[in-house]
Image (cartoon, rainbow, N blue to C red):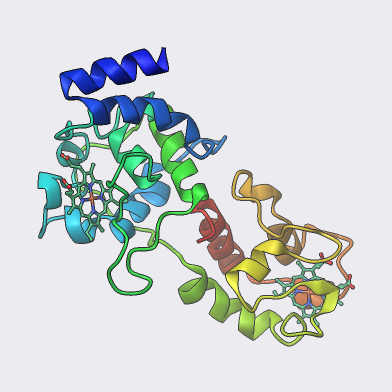
Length: 239
Ligand code: HEC
Ligand code: HEC
């Protein structure tokens, strides 16, 4: 079946389309909760894509900052987003590097500028597409920025938690010195963050006072606003 389609497609000169279909099985799993476009998906597009596909530049004649632009049919790979069918959504397949030579954002550029999206972020976009790719009419009023570990989370945790959870002697084996260490969590609780079920993340339970077993609860309790910031960050994929 595979070979047949491949050969046929090659003969017809649509080799790349066939490749899209056969590779799409490797998409990271979709997040399993309702996704909110404005706060969870639009910020990802803004950070990762607008630079080349926004109001100023439209590389490949594609723009993803407007509804009309975002859903355009691509030059060679079918619809950018096929509501309800993430495996037929070319833009998503490109984000996952599943279309030859079309990884988006393209590799290269200045360090940190063209990082590939994480499997969690792709899983969010995938879930959004499978849930119908809802994009409200009219301009998007931006209320929420894409939060990142380096800009938003680390400064907060360094101040409030660093005293006990930094370096070699970090208590409970839990360190906030890098994103990887934070995600890995500590000796007792294991992974601190659960992007597929943010509300079940031990980190949130601990800082919101919901975990009754944590020693020194007064050192672990954060104000509601900061808890919300951490929760939003986790919902956005903990990047
Ligand atoms: C650094 C610039 C840059 C960034 C950032 C970038 N792209 Fe692209 N994109 C390009 C270029 C250049 C092309 C045209 C490539 C080609 O046709 O070979 C392209 C083509 C595309 C196309 C195909 C358009 C068509 O009609 O064929 C899609 C879809 C796309 N990009 C989606 C995205 C998405 C989604 C993101 C963010 C996750 C993104 N791109 C980020 C540069 C970029
Ligand atoms: C005054 C010291 C202190 C501060 C400040 C502190 N903690 Fe802790 N934390 C502890 C102690 C003690 C434990 C229990 C360690 C153990 O089980 O051995 C702990 C455990 C933890 C664990 C569980 C680790 C495991 O064993 O899996 C997490 C997660 C955690 N803290 C997060 C935080 C966060 C987030 C902050 C900042 C909001 C913070 N802590 C601030 C002392 C502190």
